[in-house]
Image 1 (cartoon, rainbow over the protein chains, first blue to last red):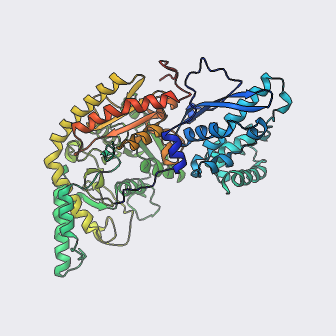
Image 2: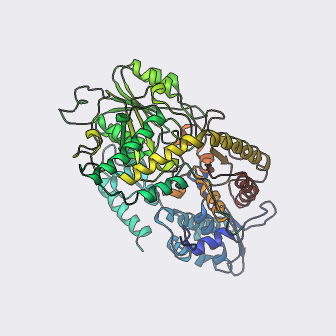
Image 3: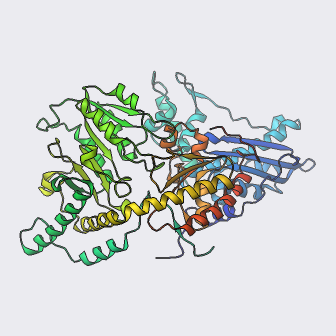
Length: 203
Length: 400
């Protein structure tokens, strides 16, 4: 049998998993300018990112994190912390989950949500900085829109369901209960489903 | 550290017993079809029947009560499919008992087959379990009535090792005229199993959990029990399972059972000792841990433990890097994002369920392995907790 067995994830993820960079070791005494926490331990992933910002140049001078989650979640935050140090806030704000997944050397489909969560954590830390420094206008609110009026399901809920594996209307309904009362939203939901699958899973 | 390889995932699968391997290698040339009347066929048939005898006597069954199938999953699917046979000629069609009772902690092959039964209009009821994983007997009492056709309860749980009182449950099922099935894939070959004493109608065995080959299982069907084949189209196994016999697999399983008979009792005692050492060691060196499963009525080699603030897949992969193979209670690693349905059924929080691993020891496990785990695990948990947003030092911030 071969001794050189491939690991479950990419070599890049393995490297960050074994040697995680920029862990927030001492939360109490670390003076950050912005902090974001996203995810939920109940669902198996939670990420916290903190940033220090050069207020003159609007550049991230330091970034640290803490993550509860699997190897790809840990690697997502570790890698992200490395690439944003020295980056302008604007540029960091526009890093996409796809960028993170690409930098990680690819993620299996059921782990794509790790890169999405990493992206959200960073953006939430930057938002926090903007809030505290009178730059509210810079915050790009993710507008959520109710798709299913009966069950109060938004486009964000649909996106999350797609990230959790829903690919068909039936699976979407299992996740969200959408369209199970009057059923009027089914066409729109199917369109959104297609768009989100395209957005996150088509390379 | 390099070169260390410790396998502690015996509930997932086991390596072939060296004696099984030897026997199977010799049997490689037995290519005859056991159904053929010529000498090649007769010789193959003899091997198959020898194995059937060995297995029957191991569980106290008669030889014609042993049906060879392709896996434990097939055996379980067979039992549940019996009840939804749409054929008017089927012995089950006239019974019209539309209620099936099973548990919330069964193997996915039972849970999925049960869902399929629900879709076909059956009323499937799921028994809950207490925090140790024991089936709620009083709930079973309430569920049972004359409409129940089948009760299916696993004998030993694969994730937490908890053993059920199958004798009592069978008695309750029979008093209400229901048939009784037990998935004994994790039990046979680890604890004594006697189908006469248990009085079950169906019992499932799998080859690869007891140092036999993969792709072979057994369904015990008690004499006189109504039956409807899952795989049709052949007279094999007295018409109960069509398809040319997996001769090599059957020979391997027979040998595996023979070896279990010799080694089982001593091994269980040894593993019980190891589990005590592991439990005490983990408790001593790691804070905020919870052991899952029943403290006594449990498979000796199975230890399921939850670590507050540390995610299961991360624990599994760090242990793997250190040469230790375990499995996780969280299904994160296997593609689904939901934590183990078994752990959730015992009432622990999703947070803790995500932070669980299963250590399942077996015949090759020795004291050095246990010591190495105890040397390695605390550092890994510390490393994970140190970077975990769900664990503050010394803080117990996730409730059970």
